[in-house]
Image (cartoon, rainbow, N blue to C red; front, side, top):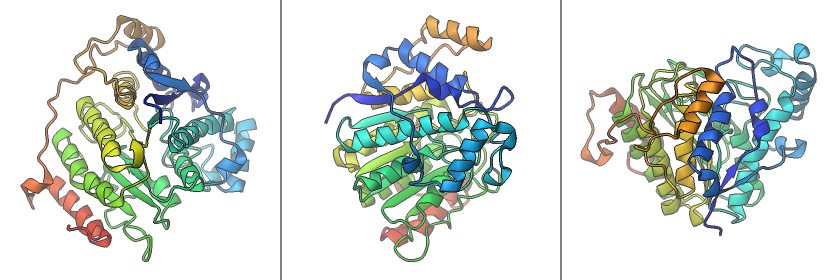
Length: 391
């Protein structure tokens, strides 16, 4: 297996563009890749482009009629069929939508194939992580569910245990739905409480169907306002123990940057430094509990498109490349100049928010009056006994 990581990148992914008024501005992808290059990380990984996902691949997750509807809306956006979630405020139809969406999906599928076949231990597609798309409908800024397609491809190639860990502020509902009754896939999502945020799912009681799939879905519903210490405490109280028990052959992670305190669409208060700490933890967990350290890391949400997303995902690329970026480093002026030229915004100066990263381990005890601890305990009580673990 190659010691170098893979970065999946094709400039054409920036054509996934819902328009100037939409919060998912593709400039976040372009600026991330520019920052990766400014730090020289494109020389620490193999940068490759995969082909767009074809119809046979898309049908591993998506219904044929839905793919046809996306094609039709892509060719004629005004004719988008809203019964498929297309042409809505969240998912406006645009010319070339199918091609851009299939290209992003292809990068995640290509990453999964490369990791499974031993081309590289780690592969990153920060344009991916579009975790809300359902088999028969677009949802929440997501047309095709590249994360689910990558997992489905791994199963098709012979994987028997795939773990999916999603730390986006929104519940990874599309991936959970795709593998709801498949015990080969363990889905874990940490997200803001569904009572407060789209898509309104991801309650701790959602643990999979009775029978073989029971206990294969894990949801940690975090209180609004959760900051670094609580977020990290919740992650470490749930994820490592489950991965140690499941022993996946591949770990797929989704790193939506919208947990950040500057994100305009949600209500958590996580810093860039805590996001980086979870990325490092996922890397370490892959090496500790996953065969050959196989790790596919995806992007996701994130709508502070200058201050947060490029820095967060550049850290992710550096960690996957075994060439981590020093959080205290001064960001190259060339990138800051590019940010101003593209957006007329002043770019951040360092790769840190200046926050100390610390948390209290679950084994140190819990406070029954603390809302964060209540959320963690609800998840552990709902899932852990189903997997033969102590809550």
